[in-house]
Image 1 (spheres, rainbow, N blue to C red):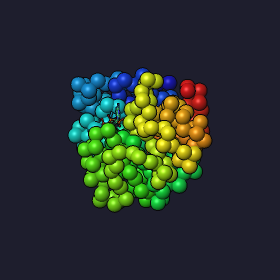
Image 2 (cartoon, rainbow, N blue to C red):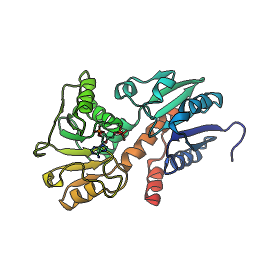
Image 3 (cartoon, protein in one colour):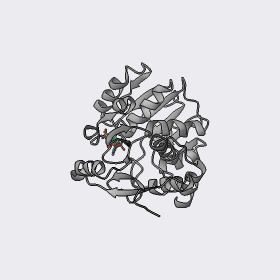
Length: 272
Ligand code: ATR
């Protein structure tokens, strides 16, 4: 039951009705007997500043920020963690004495989802398809773990920008302007939006893929890309793990507590 002293947490996105975050965080608050609730707010871009102002006025304790606001929210905050600054995106905000501090838990969430699937990262070769916000978070996470990362993107300038902005973290990053073979890569990761719609083309020609590749897609559902890779005998990993783990890390930033990962997993298995 919501009382006068109940802490409020929320997510801002547009659209946001599909979000599983309210279910995950409310479940964790209840299990850990924390007097708090978490709600989803559909915030169109034109209202983002007003919504952040409202979060301050209403003393919202913590926020998640999702598509399309992860970059636009940054100038509206009081402080941003170094990793979120380097990635150029914030997905988690903590309100400390009415100072809003931005974090990025997407990249750690992605790394954790690889680890739980027993994927070795250090010194392995990763091909990252896409150089948008999601591609940046993935590439950053991989570089911090000692991987070799190649970026392939439709717009090569964005791939080059991404690589340049991470060169101070690791020299193990390069850009490729066309794909002739993927024999050299251990893991292929689709971070583009291709696959969200069923008529989308594959992010790369599937004939290149062999059963020695591990194939990941940040999209939560089993995309055609993953299905085709699975039929070729590849190990496949969808985006649910990243989504789950980014929530675990966000909850921990807000409360210093760790929610039950198994409860979160149950929420996913019921809804997909
Ligand atoms: P997100 O935050 O989800 O990463 P984004 O920043 O808009 O979203 O990035 C979308 C990514 O999908 C980009 O890498 C984009 O390629 P461009 O940089 O060339 O735009 C990629 N993408 C989207 N539609 C695509 C398409 N039809 N073909 C190839 N790549 C596509």
